[in-house]
Amino acid sequence: MTDIFTPAKLGPITLRNRVIKAATFEGRTPDALVTDELVEFHRRIAAGGVGLSTVAYCAVAPEGRTDRHQIWMRPDAVPGLRRLTDAIHAEGAAASAQIGHAGPVANAASNRLPALSPSRLFSPLGMRMTRRPDAEGIAELVAAHVRSALLAEEAGFDAVEIHFGHNYLVSAFLSPLLNRRRDDYGGSLVNRARLARQIAEGVAGAVGGRLAVLAKLNMDDGVAGGLRPVESVRVAQLLEADGTLDALELTAGSSLLNPMLYFHGDPPRRAFARAFRPPLSWGLRVAGPVFLREYPYRSAYLLERARLFRSALRMPLVLLGGITDYDGMRLARTEGFEFVAMGRALLCEPDLPRRIAAETTTTAACTHCNECMPTIFTGTRCVLPIAEGTLS
Image (cartoon, rainbow, N blue to C red; front, side):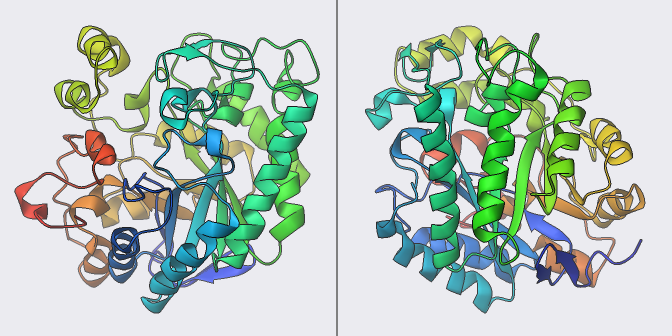
């Protein structure tokens, strides 16, 4: 498969190639609105050659942010987002908005609003208990996703990516560990998947056929008692049967309990502890080896799990995790994945896709040190000398 850098259909839109900039929170929205710095961040990514650049993270409600500095979708955000999509389009790429609700990953103390989770639990991020939404609250969550998708369309986005991963709210509903409900949204897998399916149906009904609709789905929470691949494949099959999505982007890990599973490489424990204030910083220093586990980096490190999904599904799939060169991209296509997603490597070298397209032997400078992870609080960037000034 040598068609990586040729145009490809994604639902109702056509991308100039099969390379997607994965959603990685940019840390450039101090007032929960688009800034010049955020526009430039994505303009440079677009100029670097991706087919689709994903803006992360656009919360569907103010309490759905991981902290109060993130964008939440409301009319006031549209003019800035329109400026952002215009900049991406001017460089020849398409723009995607990642919409979702952080759920138990939200920092209630920062947001000054209660965090939500399928069942009440203590969240160390906000140092307080979460709130369990009732049936009326769940209906409002579905409606909030629909409103956010329509605002994304108004702002000029070509696609929306619904966040069903990393133990954000929908992912938490899918998790048998975090979801202990006894109503229509808990218990059986079909019940736990109900919210994901209702949101996908609502968003597709609102913007499907005009915007591409993707979902980022956890293959594996990487946590004892959490969602594992066998159940996640069944969730994916339900979503495929519903016909509401144009593609699934496959991920793994838990922002709440095991974030290194979706990064792999060196765990930046000291830098992460320095990024927080006490008592959370103290807890990270003590629990660092448990929270930030070690997963040795290798090329295409999520491929083995993703193969289970490729063999069970016919819908388009996006492979991410350790895709940093032409060999990895070609492997993904050979294995039957329609698109590839890149994240950290583009922080270091935003023009990497363009250089790979020009010379397939190009190698990435990213060392997978993961020291970029704690920079999300001060402007996400690569800290390597080669990237000095890049995306700053």
